[in-house]
Length: 364
Image 1 (tube, rainbow, N blue to C red):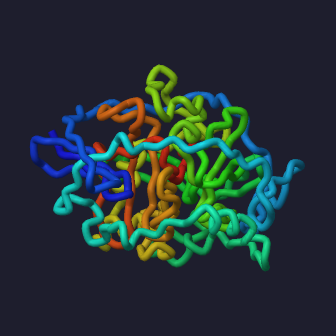
Image 2 (tube, rainbow, N blue to C red; image 1 turned 30 degrees about the vertical axis):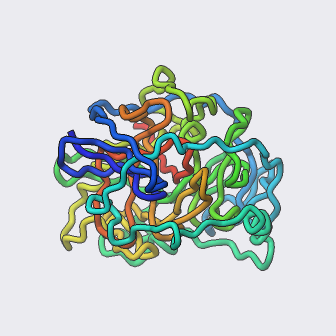
């Protein structure tokens, strides 16, 4: 079995090649070891059980629909109906850290260097987007690539909030398999403060990095696993394996499903004429070349205990699959850093209560 780590405050499992397994801690003083079982099955998904927020984002591209009948007070305005429920702690999942095996070893965080926003600064930043906000041109990170140009992408408008997304068709150079996938992170829902969980099952909720809706407009929202899956919020702390379906839709628009490990494999097997590896998945806005067309950007992460961090530095996403390490609290995930060119592994996992980015794949 491979060894797993949840890197310091990064919530990552990393394969290390020995026979022990550990779930690495966000706190270096507390640890516990396990031997997780590797899961070979891919799960996708189901119809949503929540109703989404039907607001309109203000920062659409020129090709975006500019509004819908129900306006979301988000990008460029004030947020409404913020929840105040207490966060749940994931401290019970802390484990022994091994610096030699960290995927982001060149960028390991220490408690003294990690940026943690205070509640007061978070609350003050909620309305920061209302001052001199300029709509973000979402094609900025798509243009000027060797294999793909802006004209190679198509656009789709999510009727739930009128937001437009670029998407494209990726083909594996090894297997010939093709998928049609969003080239941007999903942005839907009503913003809640990062200090709270997304536990209102009557609507879609999102985190915006630093509690600033302009970040959602640029980089997409951040979502806990149950929210992404559109399953009851209790599924963040208990297994809901029986509710996971093939081609799981989650919070994706109708006709789309959540991004899976198999989708990532197709994306990664693009024709790499320039031997750019992982840098070919990152957009030039993310210190990459985007030769794959996937246009990764660094959306960062929401930690339920420590706020937001690694914005613009790391792209994180979850898969619609619980992890065998602990199906009640851990889901499979992937991440790519702007600092190193390490590739995600299938065994990687993250605490469900974290907030990560979401991509969607078009149903065939």
